Length: 285
Image (cartoon, rainbow, N blue to C red; front, side, top):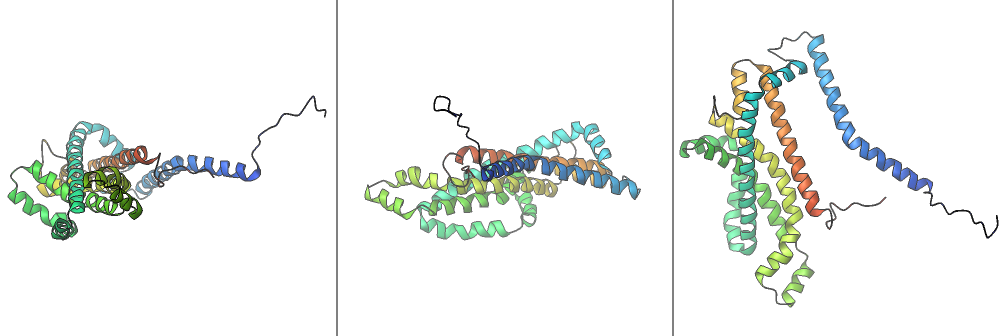
């Protein structure tokens, strides 16, 4: 080899780097493919159990029959899904407004926090199933009653997580703001709220699932039926008629709705945190 004809420098990764790249590629593929494989195996096993044991459809329908029912009853179930989704989303919005608003109020006034926080805990630990009948006695509108039930279940995770985030501000930064004479509003807007954002988003993901649970429980207690009934009421109605396939179809829609809410809130959390917070930053290696 002469100096006039140097060999090209090739940036080839070493063995450790190749192993890390291979592991990362396998992890990316497995993250999406493994849940699909597990679900496919579960559905196949479910179908085989029904066929091998000759279980009648009014006791345990096979997955094919559930799919047929989902398609045949799509008009009824879709309308019910819209009602349950509307109650869930409205309850979640109210939980965000109520939970985050109360957390800010508690943070600004220790007297208010000491006076009301224990009652928020009591409201959270009391099962909503036991409160719901009383709510439907005193609230004339069933829609308002269902919203109230779902809100009671969903607001506390937002409240507790946001309160923790607001109180977890770095003391050095808090002292720095005090030294520079920042007002209470400036400390809240420029320091405490950004610090509390990851905690708030964590509580929001929990509240999303709980608002769906609250909506389903409220529909069951309200006992709405016929036109304008939600998914829970359709499950109850199908149970009375021994239409087990429709029960499974409605349940699958409830589960799909819960997965969608969690995925949407996870995407929102990633969009807001991935550029600056440790929990969402991507690390090399």
